[in-house]
Picture (spheres, helix red, strand yellow):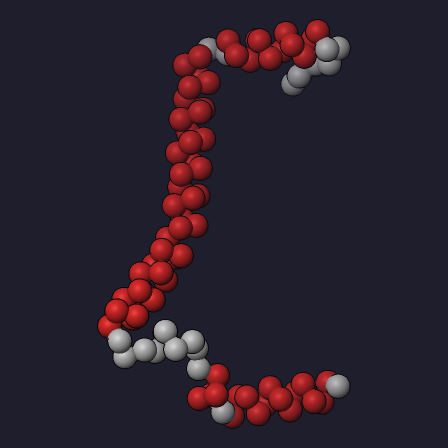
Length: 88
């Protein structure tokens, strides 16, 4: 079984033209090429935007907590003490 897989991989390695990407990637049509590049850019930048957005949200929330002066924290501790548990 392992020999068959190794021979198949070796065969594919010697024939790189058989392993071309999808037709959109190497299409001569400018519209398809532009769509491919735009999608590549979007999918590259999307995770970075999500991480940056989470960072901005976290920073705003932290600043709001500082400005609040811990008023919400006291309310949460009061609720926790009525339930018989302590919050850190």
